[in-house]
Image 1: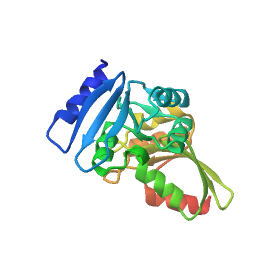
Image 2: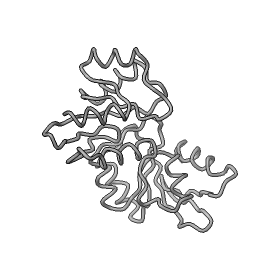
Image 3: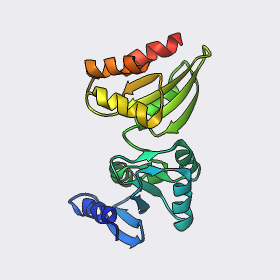
Image 4: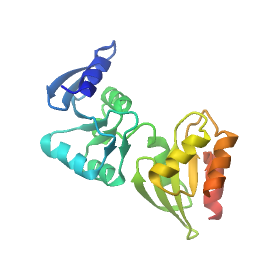
Length: 212
């Protein structure tokens, strides 16, 4: 049994409404009173692409949720699209825990980026949103402009956080600090300018979308 499976089972062994048991391989079953049981695969991968998502669903046809256990796990947009089209939820262990309690595992998405993704799709000036990664969106605007937006959920992003996003995912027009309880440091803003992008909060991003 992988260590990720053991830690996931230990998480559900703590006092709470949900319990979990190992089924086989990377598959566990999460049981919550008055909610549907959830069959979840616990992936050890640092990056989850479409091939990995397909493999898990073929291995476990009744899969409800795919969990990227590692905190560093990155989800490619093609994997997200495949899972959502096939009614399989996706995200980290925290997302799985919440989804099991709420009874929406098959439609759940990574809780760190869910609200921000929705904000972009509901913005008045947005015509199309293409999700390249869990935290990188290419947004087409009514004025004809396009913005490639990278999301950072960390509290008070630093210059290193901004540079790491750029190095991992390529050039972006905007680094969006999506944590509602923080703001980017001056060093992060300066690092963005050096790279050729802006580091913004949501209100500032809305203004930029109106003029782009």
